[in-house]
Image (cartoon, rainbow over all chains, first blue to last red; front, side, top):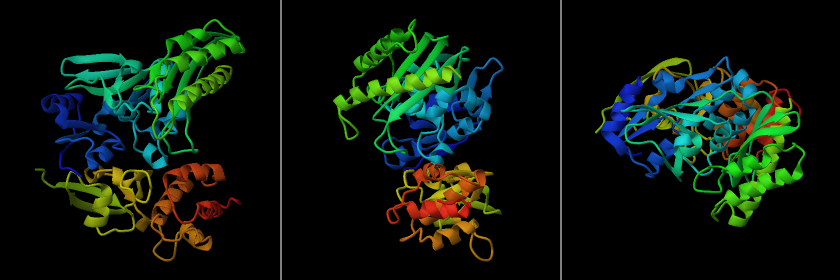
Length: 289
Length: 157
């Protein structure tokens, strides 16, 4: 592996100072399941690797009394889904966190890292968007917040500026009678990269959908929030198949996939509609519990 | 450029101090620095699970952990699985079920399966298959491995 200096900042200020001073030459390390591979294979380079797991704000995991959730950017997946109260409150997020890599990857991989890697197929991202998650970012000029749907800017690129560090994700409380779900299509049962995916949340009043968020993954340069798909559902009954079809068609229309080794444009457009419908059915079922 | 980093850790219950380069993985430290060659290097990118170890009780790929990250960590490797005499029940069942052929993946499977049974002593076949999805074997076709793990857990398959 290329040579670098390993640093272990214990405060946000220390980390941000190095990130600002060194710019592209400094990389934040949380679980390392992407970064270490990239450094080893020469796909990224670093003079300084900042292990940010000793910074308390990045390792926090708090389910607040009001039902909102704060996930430190370096908190590993297993710790999140291993928390029974959090798992019960946000089953749609757990759909994602339980299928990023295998067991050993989930022992290290963080949600913040999944987001910063900014893969078009990142499994946590459509769910976070559907759940209205917000990125809390520290920088040399203070703090700012960015909704997750605006965080990824291109494959492998995110909106962090020089000297900025993703500190945590803030997920608002889900209203009563809400449910969420994430589904992806892969050609095997586990340990693969999404060909197409969908994260959905809904809020119900009886059988009427009063609010919805539909996000799709692996079908565009970045995961996408599809407002047209969400709007197609609002005000309609959970059994209104024409509204559900309109939602899926809107998601398909927003998809701008490529053909690669995992799938063709046609297959991905078809699959993303299927994923949206199936995730929606699960989200509705959970909202009714 | 970088100077060696001194790391204090616990490996298989014994306090261990080692010196490593900042860019050395835990797997490299174990195999090349500490001469503990039970953990294997397969893919070296987190896909195959041959380097599986426990870090503070959690299953991890040691190729994706820097040695420098192990300060104060408790590491369990395949060398720490068997008792002083004889074999760990998982090792015995792997032999009985012929759940290995070339053996390169076996230490990783044993460590990963132990992590599962420590957490969930009576897993279903489904749970075993998902838990071990990050460990690859190109010899057995997996069925024998799954049966060995279920048999160790006293679950009939």
